[in-house]
Each structure stands twice: as C-alpha cells, then as structure tokens.
Image (tube, rainbow, N blue to C red; front, side, top):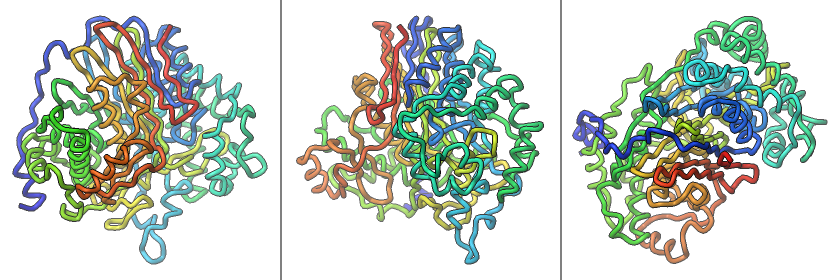
Length: 563
C-alpha cells in the first residue's frame, strides 16, 4: 500500500475526547503567578504588569514587547508569532495566529537568479525577504479582547527599557557580530546596531529611543499607529526604495486570525497545541498517537527511545507534505490525527530494528532557523499563555527602516519560493506553501499546554525544525513527573526523517545506549552542540504550587514565581 493510500485508509472523523472532570482547570487560580522567558528583564516586565493589575495576557504583551527590545536577534515587532491562550473564567482555549503574510506582489520568480534558481541572498537578506509583520497586531488584539489593562500600561516596561537601555550581553553581541556584513548594507541597520562597524561592547548600555517612540505610537493608536497612516507610508517607501515589494494596502489588510487549537488525549492527559499554519500540533498528534499503542512501562530505555525515534521519523515525513495556510489550503487534519492512521504507521515499526528513511516515501525535511523566542505564563487566576515568536534568521532580514528601531523579518524564505527547489534550509515544497498574496508560511513553532488530573504545564521552545521533538520530549518528561526546572534542562535527542540521523546533545545517551541503538540500525551523532531555549511553567493543583523552569543553556534566561 503506498503512502497516500495508507493515509486514506486511516480516514475517520476526528472526535473530541470528553475528558474526565478532574482534567479541567480548577475553579480558582493558584493565587500567585509564574513566568519563564529567555531574559530576566522580560520576565520582570511581565511580573511588573501582573503586579499592576494585569492578567496573563497583559503580561504576554509585556514580555513580548520587552523581548523586542532586548532580544532582536530572535523576535520583535518586525516579525510575528503564535499566542496560545487559556482563559480561566470560561475555560476558553484560543490560538492567536500572528504569522507574517506575503505581500500582494509576491511571485516566485522575484527570488530567482538568472538561471531560474533561488537567489539565497534575495530570499534571506534585505526587504524583499520580509513578510508583513503580525506581532504589533497581536499586541493590540490581545489587549482589546483578553487583557485587563490598556495597551499603554502593558507596553510601558518595554518603552522604559528602550529609552533607558540595558547592558549588552553575550548573545545580543554575538548575533550582531555574526550578521554585521549584512547589517552594514543598510543605513538604518548600521545606525541602530553597529559601532564603528562592529557589535557594541559587552556590558555597555544599549539604548533604542526609536523603538521606544514606535512602541509609544502603537500604545496610543493601536493598529492604526503601525499599519496605517504616516508610519506605514514611511515603512513602505523605505522598503520599496531598497528593492522590496510592500504596499500600503498590504499593511492595511493585515488581520489577526483566531484559530481553534488542536486538542490531543494521551494516557489521560489533555494536550492543547498549535494548529496550522504550524506543523507542530499535527506532528505531535501523530507521535503521541503512535506511542499510545505501546506499554512503555514494560520497556527498557533503549527500546523506548527506539520507538520514540521511529515515531519522530514518521511524523516528520508527514509534517509538511499536506499542510499550508488553513485560510487557503484544504488539509486532511482529521485523517492525520486519526488513531487508525497511527495504527497503520505503528504497524510499519519493527520493535528492535530501525526503519531506514529511504524505505519511506520521499520527502525532503526542512531545516528551519533556530532564532526564535518562547515564554510561558500562568497568572494568579489560572489564565495561561504559551507564546512562540520569531523574525526567522538571526536579526531577520538585517533591514531596518531608518528611525523605526526594529529589524524586519525574513519569513518569505519559509515559503516554497520556487516549486521543487530547496530554500536555504533544505525545504522543498509545492503549491500548498507557495508565496501567494496574503498567505502565511508554515512554521514549526509549537506553543502548548499539557493538562492532567493534578498538574498543568505551559511549554514551548525555539529551535527551528527541532522545536517539535523538544516539545514532545518535554511533555513526555512532565507526564512522567519531572518539574519544569528539570524538563527544560534534560538532554535532548532528535530525528526528522532526513537526514537519517539521530542527533543528540551531550550526555543524552550513555555509551552503552549509543551502542545498543547503533546495533538496531540507528545512525547516532552522539554529543552534538546543545540546541533550543525552552521555557516552562507549571501548576500543581493538589498542593497549589507553581514552578518556573528557564533553560540553563542561556545564562540570561529567567523563570520566576511571584512572591
């Protein structure tokens, strides 16, 4: 049976699982709050807004805006993201899609060279690589629909940080140094980020008054302050003068999309996660469905890891084959999440031998940018926010409209710009992920909630194509009893179908475990560099205890419980 036939054979309607009443959130919240983010100043910004009467959604604005100031390498108001929210008072879960969109003049040949191949420089650097940003619209939407405070109050900590400055830290400096040749092409980027042609010195106070002014404009005028009027006209003029294709109509047409999250049931736990245009929730669903057919408690660690790798291999084979922008592409989501489809995949797994990826139908797996931000929040009332956002590559396109204070994304490279040709990270795609006007590119960002009878977790991470397996392993560890502080620190391993290699962080496996996996036929790259920057918070409802785990792989990460 070929792969498509196997998929069709598994078709059933996806039904909503009725969860035990004990899995629902408690009627009252924990009474305190917890935030974990990539930088202590962003965590502090969120806690400040909570202390001033805000809720988790106001805090999500505050943390995100602060990261726009202090972590521009990974995210900012020139980019977009996904905001998974849980509202405690009525139990509503909602997925705010603030992904960037393709400008109306988008057509694949714009990114082609004279030979008809992708021009990587055009796809990765400069304003032609930039989609229409979604993060400013997400802030105004959340403030208007879910927050308790005016947008001005939630943006205040970030505005203060931008005006007063902060000490330059290692990751901030290294990201600028890595991209300084591209930044030097554009006067706006040179003026903002470079000092005598290089990154600012460690420990020096870095200020961004232009970004403070931009955030103040958004605070006072909302979407109109960014997507319309004089500011929008200034951005369009600068983008087009430098070779981009934005139009004022593109900015004015940008809209937030509220989507229904994917809800999964795994061994009595409910997992709420990201729907398309994220491929993460579909892949998580396939992996959990595959593993649900095994009694892992009866297996040793090597065989458990083997089955987990095989689940990863099959989910990554499917993850971008069928998916695109849900506003334009019809996708077999119910079929991919069907237990019958998972049973078919499970039947192809040998209990003690690896399946070579070239024995599965061909698809070239994507490798995406690692440079993304994630933060997790639970407030005193039990509201939750899991947020992952990005500008794609380090410092996005490297292009700054003079006087605005932020770098534009380079998310156009996440589209399949030319059918059948790989982008900079190996993604080969077709029409479902083409750069059509108004379309949103696929993403691996996977903000998630995991809810059990006694404990609730809020989890997510950056890490490009490894995001999904990191969240998967993190949820499994949390279900097994690990607290967030341990979940985020655990060594990680990853398989994404192609290349047919098990990547591992240092100390993920013992020498004996590596040999055992190799004997099963797995190719193991033991002890690669570390990856990801996971941030997780949890609430134990039996003891009313909060925990916040910030990834120790980054020295500036911060997880705090409100005192």
